[in-house]
Length: 274
Image 1 (spheres, rainbow, N blue to C red):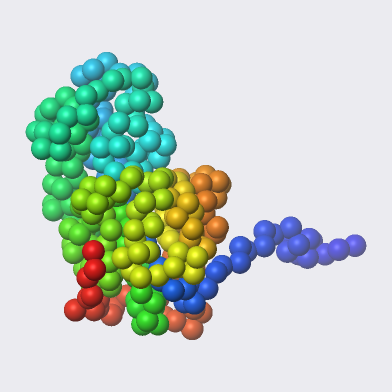
Image 2 (cartoon, rainbow, N blue to C red):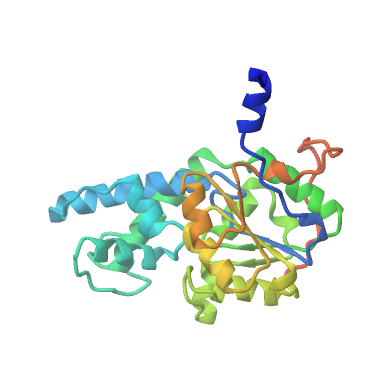
């Protein structure tokens, strides 16, 4: 008879084999939900704005967290608003990027959300996820070029507030996307532009994402490894979108001999190419 302890061991799930990020040409990270917990700040800001809009316009069903992951997460701000409104069969004029927050347009709603996000960020501040910071420090020490690919127009402000801007040679964000006419994730444009800016081949590089739209973008751009960080989107959803491996925290990639201390500081003179 097989001992019960051995049966339990045999039935235990086999840990997923992790790729070696330290052998990559470069690593490009999404920001919100990957490097910093700003995804939570974004979620609260979207909830506040959409609750108001839905109540004013009698839109049903009510906005939920599932709507954030399905229609908003990872996309450029106005594209997220348009996607959600389309899900409710509500037609809203696009407007213009300089619309005031009270304007009843896609841009006005997006600007209203951005004002709420900025106020929360300045009032509460932000700090990076400890595991993400530890990995970024270790990759920097190993000489791996790093970049950020974020749909947010607030990326530079968030990176600076979190004290980690100096680790990243390039930042391809919502500002760059608008300037260069890059399509929103899940289109491949932003992650392809990130690889070009960093001077690396996607086929030998790594993309790190917590959103299904971002995982799809990186996969379409030809990244050999797409790391999904499950902060709520769901492991299976991330894999279905293109993630080649899924973890719950980036400290899973730290070499066993490396300390997880986050006491070192970012480089003071980063090379900026975006």
